[in-house]
Structures are given as structure tokens and as C-alpha cells.
Amino acid sequence: SNAPAGKVELKKKVTLLRGISIIIGTIIGAGIFISPKGILKHSGSVGMSLVVWIACGVLSLFGALSYAELGTSIKKSGGHYTYIKEAFGPQMAFIRLWADLIAIRPAGLAVISLAFGQYILEPLFMPCGVPELAIKLTTSVGITSVMYLNSMSTSWTNRIQIFLTFSKLLAILIIIVPGLYMLFKGETKNFDNAFEISNVQLSGLPLAFYSGMYAYAGWWVLTVPLAICISMAIVTSCYVLTNVAYYTVMSAEELLASEAVAVTFAEKTMGNFSLAVPIFVALSCFGSMNGGLFAFSRMFYVASREGHLPEVLSMIHVRRHTPLAAVLVLYPMTMFQLFVGDIYSLLNFMSFLRWLFIGVATLGLIYMRYTRPDMPRPFKVPLIIPAVFSFTCFFMVFLSLYSDPLNTGIGFAISLTGIPAYYIFIVFDRRPKWLQEGLDSFNRAIQIILEVIPAEH
Image 1 (cartoon, rainbow, N blue to C red):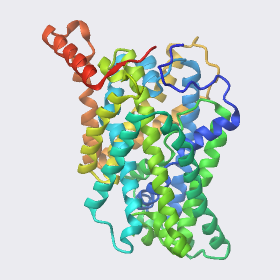
Image 2 (image 1 turned 90 degrees about the vertical axis):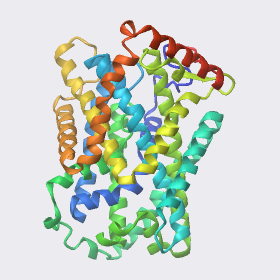
Image 3 (image 1 turned 90 degrees about the horizontal axis):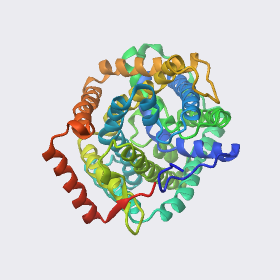
Image 4 (image 1 turned 60 degrees about the vertical axis):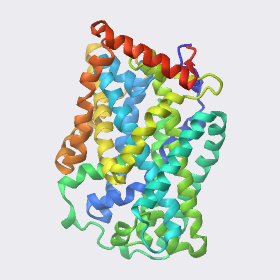
């Protein structure tokens, strides 16, 4: 098979239940504990924020169905990267890979790790705020330990993953149940004038969209249409109910003032038991950090096999079979972004790039309907779905240049550096001899120092 070593081969027949649990397990992560604040802030009211949560769920469903067509008609592994390469060629795909490598993944890891640091420290500093530096230091310890785990052992990481999936579902349950109980008891005052339109601004829209879509990220893991529809319905309901629970207990002002929404919620509803919530949330974040790193290193294999990354990056450790190189590339980038940005600026910076390229991949689906009409497509999505999805992505992405010009501008600039990088690293035949020799000896040196070898194909 042409699957990279270490890639978990999804059997051709993923049972429906297993498929649903894969999708839900991937999507529900730290997003639901990070995004409520961002969405409320940028949507302007309680009612509008719930509308945004539902809209992002529906959009993610549209995206996932589009990806289901791409995934079932293009048989190669590699996800977004492969879809863009098939539709628009290697240069565009490289720019996507480049942005992923130096910006999207490190920023994503930094965001989720910051949430981890925040939730671990919040109960210790109650009721005062947590010092910024303390959060960043705890976060860097978290990142370092995840990186260490991933470079030491793969089997251990898989075992811990199941336990972490369980803890995130538990965290959500602990919030929804008491919240809805109080709602049915008649605690509805925070919903009284839910649609206070005065605060709603168009410029807030893309940033609310970024926060919302962040919470649903991961819908691209599986391409089984029925499993996608059921999973997205479940996840969207979970998210909306969680937010309803938050609003039952907290006013909009209280939610915006809170640094860790779930902790504030737990304090108000559970008294002494409230410590459980931040612990589960921190575990959930840790799980996502862990899973994300694992997935990332697998993407490296695909790209280096295509000759799109220096060979050393696709190598694995001689004895441990862990993707050491991937860890070493991500670590400094993540640390750097962690110390320069905060959760919401990193989220905007990362989202700009992420949705730009996901929009491009979906556009590729529409484009290939016309350029490659005879391509076998086991699952065909109605064209309106990718059309609405890619249009929304591009609309939000370009509108966000106006809403948060600094972070999105930096994101844009970074993706443009992919163009010279493509010519330096990839266009081999025109590469000067000294550069080629330099890269070769660099590859060899790193191979010896790290004790890594090429993965068997």
C-alpha cells in the first residue's frame, strides 16, 4: 500500500458507530471552552451568539460534505494538501503546506496550549486573575511535555488518548446537565432580550465566525457522508446546549469578564465540586494537543514523499519509530508564537490562513467538476453546498482583513513567503550547486544527530 508508515489505516469499512465516534472525538475539544467568549464578544448579543453557533455547525456540515466528495474521488492520503494539489497543481499545494508548517499548526497548538495553561491555573488563583506570565510558563511546560511524549513513544500516546476523549465528553456533560436543570426551573432572565440588535456590527462577523469554526474544526477527518451528517447534528446540539447552560448561569457581562468560562460556570453551580471541571477541561486540551501533534507528523510523511519537504523531515527515529523531526520543527515555532500572541489574536491569525486554504480546496471541487467531468465520484454533493461554503470562507477571510488587519495581514504575508520558498526548496533542476550540496550535508548531519531513518513506504 502507498500509505505512510505509522499511518493508522482506516479499514475500508468503518462501521457507522465507529465513524461517528471518530468525528465527534476529533471535533469536540478545547474549542467549546475557548470560543463562547469570542463569539459573544463579536456577535454582540446572547441570541446572535446562539445563531452563530448554529450557523457554524451548518457551514461545517457543508464543508464536510464537500470534503467527502473530494476524499472519495481522490484516493491519495494527505487531506487538504492533496485536494489542492489535484485541482490547482503543486505550487499552490506547497504554499498551503508552507503556511501550515510555519503558521497554522504552531498557532493552533499555541492556542490550545494556552487554554490548557489557563484552565490549570484558574482554580489556583481564584478569585483573582491569573498573571499572564504564569499562564505562558505553564503553557510552555505543557507543550514541552506533549512534544517529549510524542518523541518518546507512540503506543503510550494512543492509550492516553482514549481516556482523554472520555474526559472531554464528561466535561461537557457536567455543564449541560446542571445548566438545563436550572433553565427548566425558570432561570431565564439572561435570555429576556436576547436579540439586543444595537451591538451587532458587520465587522464583528468574521471574528465571530473564526471563533465558531474553530470549535468545529476537525470535520475533515472522515469522508463517510452519513456519519458526517449524524456527527455534525450531535456536535452542534452539544455546543448550543453548552452555551445555553452558560447563559442560564451567567449574564453576558459575566461571561465576557471570565478568562475560563467553564471554571466560572462550575463555581456558580457546583460549589466544592467545581474543581472537577477545570481538570477535565485541561485534560481535554492536553488530548487535543497530543492528537494534533500526532496528525501533523503524519502529514510530513506525505509531503516529503511528494518531494515537497526536505527528506529529513519525513524520517522517523531508528528505535522509537517516532516522528522526531516533526516535533523539532514545530517546537520552536510554537514557543515563539506562544510568547508573542494571546489566545484570540493567535486564533484570528491562524483562522485567516486555515479558512482561506479550505475555501481554495472546496473551490477546487467545483473547478474539477468542469475540468475533469469523467473523474469517478462515488459520492457527489449538490454544487450549491460547496458554492455556499467556499463563498462564505472567502467572504469572511477578506472581511477579516478589515476587522483585524494586523493578525490577518501577518497571516497573508506569511503565505506569500511560500512563493520564494517554493522556488528555493522545490524547483530542483534550477537550484544552484552550492545550495544543493549544502542541503544534502545538512540532511545527512541531522540524520546522524537525531538517529532518524526514512520511513518504509
